[in-house]
Image (tube, rainbow, N blue to C red; front, side):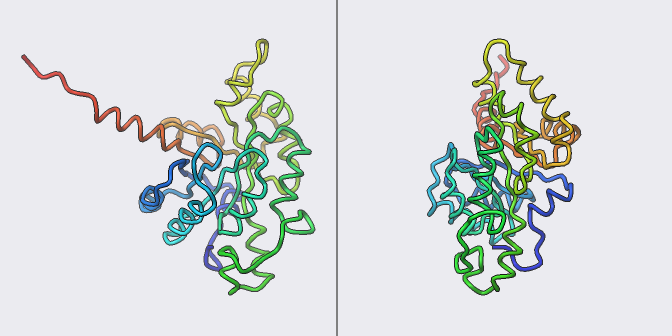
Length: 253
């Protein structure tokens, strides 16, 4: 629910800014606040593998909004109704898993974009419309800047990446490396080879590329390699820190 005039995360990403965020898949408002205070550009709340329902998601969005931290939401596979409700509650964008084809991308666009591009129901009275305090035209303009990223998570999706990101209303892509590895069959290219192929594909070159990263070095490599957005796997970062705390030093003697 950004104030009018505030630069939206979708606008910044499409302009080519390098943006760093974190993937949160646990219900903890303080973590969202800490990410904002630490200076990250956005938070991605994971509703695919995390426990958040709409009520908890709204709480995370409200806490983030108080600090001016944009929220993206990863929905479950084809959970278009959850995506619509997340946007109404003030999310700045949607990350959609397992987009396998241009047809599935079109279905996502129909759910998330207002007419004439899509079929999303129009309402200015939820949080995204500042509870009815903005005009319909203002709300429509703000909604037009939402960020929509398609997750590519199979060899087939990698092969169709250009078709998927070419759909009007899809801003870019994020490769789900773990699912890609799980879906890979004997004889398929390696995950590294598929990543190289999709990153080098001219058909994806002018869209927003988001990468998952497990730490600062991986994030730096992604930015150097052409990513506009890096999403830190916060669970991985925290567990590595916790394991470090649990290691006992060997005392002399």
